[in-house]
Each structure stands twice: as structure tokens, then as C-alpha cells.
Image (tube, rainbow, N blue to C red; front, side):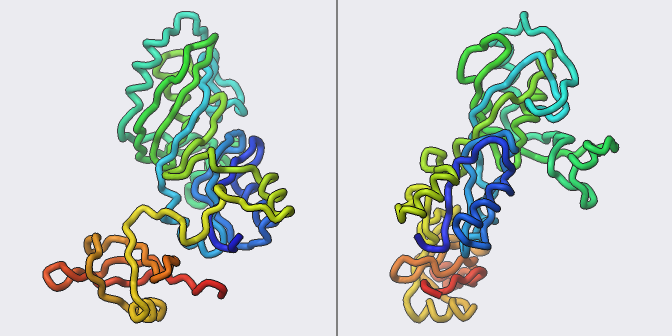
Length: 307
């Protein structure tokens, strides 16, 4: 495998996303590794790791929409909004009906301000909210704008639990949705389990565990489809190819003029060389010649292969 690319990891329960990154650094013997969206310790599923030069692309991937599957338990609310927290209230759910649940879940679809859970890594004046909560200090109310494309029940209500599927913007707290759903139904609820099944174009079906990564590397076996080399990483903007003269200019941080670029001034663009290797990520500085030509400004230039 090359040293630069994306690794799709199927995270096990019990560890933080940072723990996964630390283990991956040891397994891959690579210092530069990041991730594209945190998972809570109890959550499982897809964690997209950027490795080597691909860490420079993290900012373009981290905001990709996410898809989750999980289970909500009604009648029990917790301080962390998930199964690991202390119970804060309990209520009977014998009168709870699936129709009422469906109607309540549909009201959480759309774009709105979501209250950030007290037990979260959100920082206020440099201090994480969960640090304040654990100390017993007052936790300020924080909120953020999120978009929920779909929040649907995927199976019947059995006892006090339902399975669900959630499609949402990056940064959405699934456990906060579960908590707020319980509050809306008047019985309380918490997130019983959660698994991330997609991040943008990446699906958990292609991911493998870190144990499997270590084993495959030990036996010199390929990691694909869990591994995507730098040149194959899909970015959320258009691509263009440049010739040798333009490549030299871009590698030196200079602008290049190109015809046929389908992007507006200010847009990001993925720039490849004649061989299809990722050369740079840049922006369209301006359109000239009645818009027929685009002036490309490199922002992130990648070293030639082998360097």
C-alpha cells in the first residue's frame, strides 16, 4: 500500500475516535493520521481515517453528511442521553404507540438549532462541556444548526425500544435527538445503541477492523476496498487535468490558465496531472475571456510520487 490515502475503519465499541487514530498510527507506522468525524466511545461503525498527505484533505471530507442506524429506548432518560449515563427520569410507556412515535420523529426532520448535550466535547472558553459536567459546574446552553434529512423508525416498537435510521448533517448529536424525542413524547428516552453506516460516499460495508488491518499488513495482503490511495479519494468538487507546462507552474505555487473548467470563480477544484495523479487542490481565482478560461490558484500542492 502507499503511505497516503484513506482508511475505512469499522470501529468497535468502547474506545474513542482518538484511540482508533493512535492505534492506527502504530499499525501503519505513520505519524500523520486524522479522522473525518468523531464517534462516541459506545458507538460503532464507519470511521474515515486520513493518512499521510491525505490529512491535508480532512477539512474537505469532515463535513460530509452522515447516516446512522441504532436503537432508542423509551421511558428512561439519562444525563448523557445514552446508555452509559446516569438515569435522570423514568416513566411508563405502556400507552406509547408507533403512530405517535412516527409523527414525533418527523418533526425533527429539517434544519433547526440543536442543543448540544452537556456531556460533549464542545468547548466553551477552551474547556470541554463534559469536563464542566463531570466537575458539577454549571454547563452553559450551547446550540448549533443541523440538518436532519431523515429520522425514521425501521421496525416495530418492541417493549420499550425501536430501531431507527438517521440521515443528517455532520455534527448532529444522535443521542440528543433520542433525548428530545423522548421529551416530545412525554416519557423520556435515550440512545441505546448507535452504528454509523455511511459518511458521504463511503459505506461501512467497505470498512474493516483495526485487527484486520494489522493482520492483512502482516501477511502482505491488500487492504482494498478499505484503502483508497490519494489519487482515488473522491472530493466534493469538480476535477480538471493539466499538461506538463501547467503542472510545473502549479507545483511552484503559480497560477495556471485552463479552458473547459466547469467551476465558478471562488470554487474549489481538484487538479490532476496527465497520468491521473492528484497534483493539487486549488481554487478558481477568476474567469477570463468572457468566462471561457479559468485561472487556477493552487492552495494545497502534493509532492510527486516517491518523494
